[in-house]
Amino acid sequence: MGKISPVSAKYIIHATIEIDGVVERPDVIGAIFGQTEGLLGADLELRELQRSGRIGRIEVDVDTRSGKTKGNIIIPSSLDKAETSIIGAALEIIQRIGPCNAKIKVENIEDVRVSKRRFVIERAKELLKQMTDRLMPDSQELADEVSQSVRVMEIQAYGKDRLPAGPAVEDSDEVVVVEGRADVVNLLKHGIKNAIAMNGTSCPDTIKELSKKKIMTLFVDGDRGGDLIIKDLLNVADVDYVTKAPDGKEVEEITKKEIHKAIRGKVTAEQAKLELGKDAEKTTARHSGFHKPTTFVSRRPVTMTSTSRPVSSHSTRYFRKPKKVLTAEEKAKFNAMLEELIGTRGAYILDEKLSILGKVPLTELSSTMKGLSNVYAIVFDGQIDKTLAETAEKSNVSILVAMDSKIKPNETRINILTSSDL
Image (cartoon, rainbow, N blue to C red; front, side, top):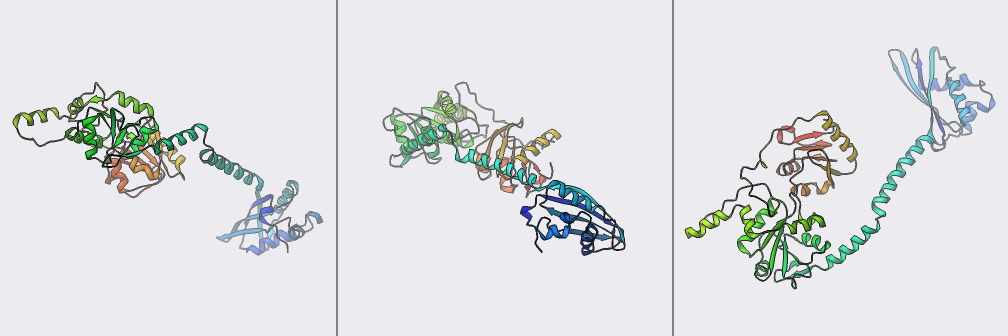
C-alpha cells in the first residue's frame, strides 16, 4: 500500500479520542476505516486515498487508565482544504469502537506550509544578519583595515633591546614611551609615529639612554599597573612628562580622541611624583643621607591632568561592600539581557545605571575585566566559576549574571544570579 511522504503533506488533522473502556490501537484504526467506509463516496474513500498517497499513515497514540482510554489521532493529508476538512469531520461520526462508547473531537487542522514559511522567514533573518556582519564591510572599514596594516608594517625594532617603535623615534625630538607593542600599534593607527614600547614593566637600557637625549613622555594604562610603571621609571630614567589612559582603560584600546586628550593633559614628572606621594619620602632620604624604604599606599588610579590632586590613602576603592538587594525591575532587565545573549557566547558590560558599556566575546571577558575599574555588572552567556569570580572581585564588579554557576553565592562577595534565579 502506498504511503504519503511526510514532506508532501499540506495539512495535518489533529484529533483527540475518549473511550469508555479498554481498546488497543488497531481497534481505533479499524473503526476509522470501517465506520467511514461508503460515507463520503468513492472519491473520498479513506482506503483508496491512502493507497494513492493522498492520505498518509494514520498515527494513533492511546493510553488506558482506570478502565478508560484516551489518546490522539494524527492524519497527514495532501488533499485541498475542503476535502481535508470533510475527512476531519467524518472522524467525529464514530461513536463506538468495539463494545465501548467513543468520542472523537478534531482539535485543529494544521497548515504545514505556514510552519515551513515561518521557519524560512526566521532562517532568512539569521542569514541576512550574518551576511551583513561578516561579509559586507562598509567602505570606511575597508579603508581603516588597509591603513592599519600599512601602519603596523612601519613598526621597527629600535636599539640594542630591539624594542617595538614607530618610524619617527630616531628623528623626533620627543618620544612617547608606552608599555607594549599593541600600544605602539594603536598610536601608529592614529598617526603618532614617535612611540616606543618598554616590552614589560621594568625599564630597559634603551629607554634610559633615550631619556637623556630626548624629551620623554610616559603614557601608561589607567590602572594599578600604570601607577607602578610610573613609579619605576621616575626613579631610573629622566622622564619629562607623564600621562595616563582614561581610568580603567588600556592605551591599546582607546580612541583617537582619548589619545589626544590624554597627551594634551600630560603633567610634569614632578607633578606625577607628587600625585604618587613620593616627594616627602625622597626629600627625607636626601637630607638624612640614607635611603628610606619605600612604602607605596594603594590608591584609586587617577587620570593625570594639570589640576589633579593627591588621592587620600583612605580611598574606598577596596572597601568590601555588603551585597545589594536587587529590585524586580533590575532582575527583569538582567533577564532580558541574558535572553538576548543566549547562543552568542558573548558578555554585556554594564554601569550602575544598567546601561551597556560594551559587548565582548566570552573568551576575552577575564582579560577585559582586568583592565576596567568602573564596571557595575556583567551579564554573559556562560557559567560562573571560581577564577572568573575572583577576577570580578579584583575589578570591583558588583553583580555577575550568567546561565549557570559552579560556585555558591556565599563563597563570594559578588551578587551571583543565574537564569533560574531570574
